[in-house]
Image 1 (tube, rainbow, N blue to C red):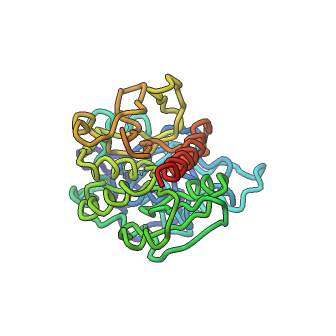
Image 2: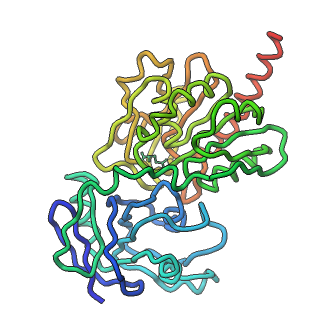
Length: 360
Ligand SMILES: NC(=O)CC[C@H](N)C(=O)O
């Protein structure tokens, strides 16, 4: 079945649809992911909502879909572009093939696309709107992505609690990845997940030891009506921000963010910790970055930096117990060394409560 990938710059690519025939055109922002593995995590990470993902590794789907690697209950991507997809997966005793899984959720898997050519375009012209369609002459609508109240669509509507560990963490859900919850539970925490717009009073009633701001889709400035609320919470509790959560910490304290040309998506992004000089290989998925020049009056300092392009990859606050990472310390596809940031966060909480007692 012939289908097409159309980009908003007018370029078109013809491919073969592996999933069932489409009734409608699917449109989204086109981005590329460079990891060799981790496609199941990518598909089910809510941060990818409304995006069409191009996988640069040429063989995708070879270990099927399993029970362990889900980051949420369903896939959030708008469409999937591969060179070769849905390989044999029987050795892995996978429950579903990639094709069956995407079919179940009506998400197109378009193969035999020259992914190198698409990625070269994105790297030169930036991520842009794109469409997967049976229509050879479809014209891509260009203001489709930015207008959505995207975080409210993926955030929990209710407060839920997991685990019964010794430290109580509130996890703000902007579209959290399950690995963040799992990482906190494995640090012996009780975790309460709250909707993205939960106010200070509700957090105070929950009486947490610390707060984590999760990852999530879209432009962080779409949440500007909540920045003051976040600032009030961040000045009262030890906090960790991950990806969108990191960007929101910067914005809450008066910093700024901007859209990158094509972002970082993959499992091998080198990060240097400016304090320890240690380099981490990190998993990433973001289109926006914190503008370094905007941090001067925020109390925030750059702690982590991307070795490839020098962009800000994480912050600490000069006085408050706050640590943030633009990358994903909870991620599993590939390197796992940055998981120790969760241990550091718990240590920060312990130090903080020790300090509170000393002044009591
Ligand atoms: N994974 C994330 O949290 C992504 C954050 C934000 N939506 C960005 O693209 O930069």
